[in-house]
Image (cartoon, rainbow, N blue to C red; front, top):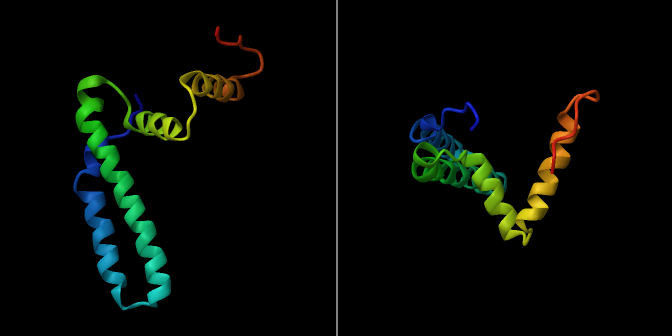
Amino acid sequence: MTDINYDKLKGSTVAIIENVEGFLSDFDIEKLTILKKKLGLIKGIIGDIAKINDCCGKNGGIDPLVMMMMMKNMNDGKTPEDMMKKTFEYFRKLMPKNSEDPKE
């Protein structure tokens, strides 16, 4: 798991986004609509991460961001083998040149 403290997502981040939405109510309607949609998406993602952390993160030991990436890949029709191959490719890029490749 990553060292992200997901408990902070419960109230504070969502409250900040809601306050920003209220503050922007007097601005250009077209720009506000686009921004509000983006803020809504961000708020939804934060909510999803908090929910995943509640059910799987603390008790199951699954990182919520990893779980969301897996769910997105499943929605895209990718198989678990495709995801593993992509993960190995990513880690190979991160590894120093003189280290050994991980066994597949």
